[in-house]
Length: 512
Image (tube, rainbow, N blue to C red; front, side):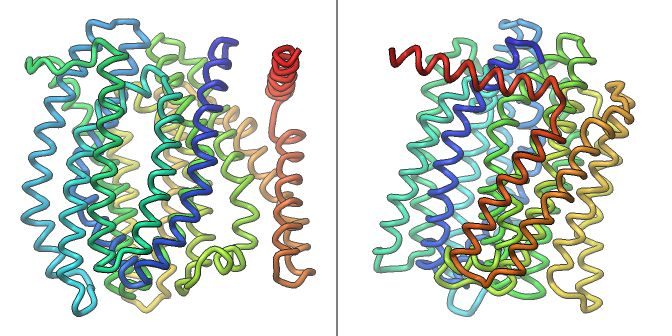
């Protein structure tokens, strides 16, 4: 990366990390209180009902990727006029998508919730109310997509940091209201979250309109832009459907074979995994626009170099936090939750391993999307991921334990990463030898060596706070040392040292 690119990525990463760290702490606490307030059954209902409406948004998922890609490419080409045309069309398309999702949700989705979901007797009415709140939240999310894409493409990550911190503390306040609410808490939580998201949407929209003059809705149809975005979206839909089925399809399978308790366990494990992944989300959000802009400037060599660096660093950022959680999952869940759903610790370990694999693949996805040539990539990778639900169904039908569904999902994510590397070689000229030596080799060595000492401590010390503290400290120290000595190249180490030294110099200079 160039010096200017490094500065921008580091600055945006710092902004997002401050937000992420605070949000993670608050999220872990609020998840516990939500589970405590709703109970295991209602918590499971909230997760699975929300998953149904999410499955209906597969077209918006594809369209949001297209919007992000097209807007970022135009900024990379420094064409503000074309940026305005794309934003306008993106808004018109998302208005149409919102209408389609609303119709589908109130027909097919509503029928599915009331016919096929395993909802305890007496809670169907509450489940329907939560479903309607989820529908409203989803429509709002669809209409916000072009504005969020504009903030990311302009790399104004500080607004996410400021508003995100306010959002986290706002949710904390809402959780306290939930705990003392005397009536049906499941319904209350569904609708209060919608109104809160509505407030956040207004803030982001006002910011975009004031900061980016090109973000205006002109109600002017542009057939050429529409056709380009529709073609990209059409092929990207393969991957979007595959990811939705991977997450929500497996969630529904678990509901069908084990009921809401399994959904509650997966919901808890998903909260833990989401908190851990969010720590690398700041880095990925900061670096992804740079990957797209490098490709838009026809610098494929820099694109591949940035791809390799970000894949490795993304994995390491997740692994630093994931290792102690994987080892001490049982005790962490005991002290975190009042009532720990059965299988939650096992689910957490499996989903964290899947998160590590996803961290490697995310920069590759961004790079391939930047090319715009995604037809065969989506057909091949999307088709492989679409096999997750039917394969998991077969295993569960044969009597395999419920966690088999999550294991199948993780194995297919690994296979998907292998396919992405092959496509990056074909479309970007990525050297397989370079990716193997610069990314996978240090990842494997650091991962294997990192487990040795923490596992020794885990099995030699009795369960408790003392073991948790010692294990966590040792895990983090060991991982950081191994990453610095083995995981990073000399150039990357020098950049980190020089960056830290310059920060300290600036800090002491400001003091004096």
